[in-house]
Amino acid sequence: MFDKSKVGHSFPPFTVEVERGKIRELALAIGDDNPIYQSKEAAQAAGYPDVPIYPTSPTAFSFWGNAQLIDQLSSLGIDLMRVLHGEEEYEYLTPIYPGDTLTGVMRLVDARSRQTQGTTLDVLTIETDYTNQHDQLVLKARQMMIVRE
Image (cartoon, rainbow, N blue to C red; front, side, top):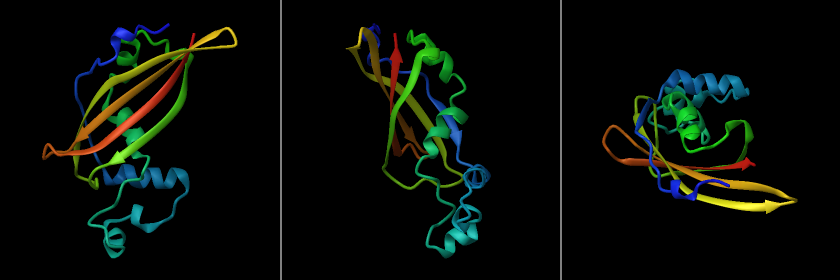
């Protein structure tokens, strides 16, 4: 069973710069030919001030910006070989565009254990708050992971 005394643990901040090229690469990778993800001019013609990010871009933020993610999760006592993805959700508080520099602070906010068919499952919830270069909270990301014991 997971050590629930770790709930509330927060990790050092990490930063990630939102890059237009990375947004374009994601569009190419998923086969989205919508021009608003390809160029600033197309985005502006559609009413955006710049290329918008994808709704699921914060998944990449945690991997691009938080080089210590694996070590941080391991430091909580999580066996990463036993982790299943539960769910993710994002709450956008203001638009995010290329050129923004985001600072993320990740923390463990909940841990529950469940017994099922003789096996223990730990359900962990991690939240990351992102502020921009103006110290404005712009995004709240929440991940739920399941750790099979």
